[in-house]
Image 1 (cartoon, rainbow, N blue to C red):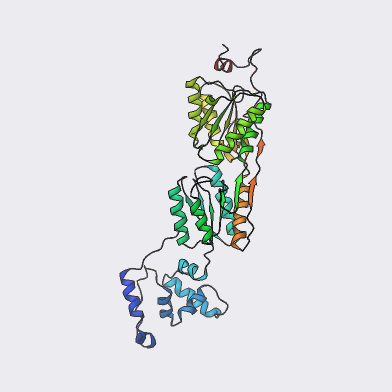
Image 2 (cartoon, rainbow, N blue to C red):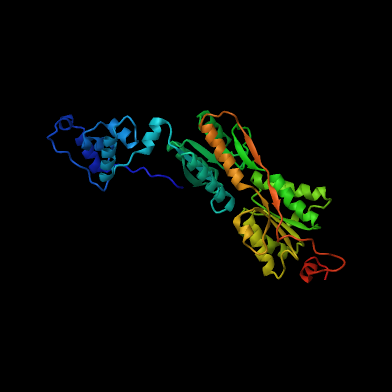
Length: 392
């Protein structure tokens, strides 16, 4: 987690502060002022004592108040640098009720979807005068709750939260609403919680990928899902099944591999299907990196992409455009997704009351990893495919 540390005062500084409270010494201009160790941070009260100014004047000068003369502001800032003074932003946030900080809680930064979303959110936040704290929850309800508690203690102005799923920790989100904490959820629209959210159209992602392969003549289409305890993976699997049903293709549960959105899912799925003798000519993958490791595993087995096996990823991340062949994928429009989330949060932070549930539509990007299904029954262009399907 990226966060600023709160450093406790040392014993020596406490004793100096006590000396500084001696009213007789403060009023006597001839009394020497005991300076703190420059290696430690001093307080605004101590800086005010050194300068012979009030603490309020020092605070206003540090924050460039036009009520303080320019010469005084410059003198205060110079002394602040000299004596290693830094404003206590946490105390200031508690006093003003604003910290100019937004917290973003994502499952992980190892996946391109979340890393790219955070990058966009941070950029928009900075453009609007806010900084960001970022934390990874690793899809743990306990970690998420602890991070939310920590960020509330740090007085952040708003939260962007990727919940573990749509039905867990509902009491946590209801408590946030009751306490007037501003937040927006991503990936999951919470059940029974009235808050703004941004989600991908996950069923459409699964449907688009599967229909693309069906239109190219594929009938044996395998699917690598994310963790099916999440609504995102469930939605995409539902779209896959609906596309097969609409095309009159019988569902084969052996062709569904449940993964965890980790890039190794692709290799593991292909290896398992080979061990189990599962025949397929197309793969729908949960994420671009998963699709690419599946592609490498297929190549390692002596088969070709897309001549033997066609593959569709999800995301349209940079890596999908760098591998040969370039990966056919379903674009989640992550930049649009991230901007919608941060803009909703900023609107609520500035008083907007309207609750919005934004669904980001996906789009298919056909590239080089998909092709017409191998011809079965007449001529077979590739012996590996015929062998796989038990025709030789």
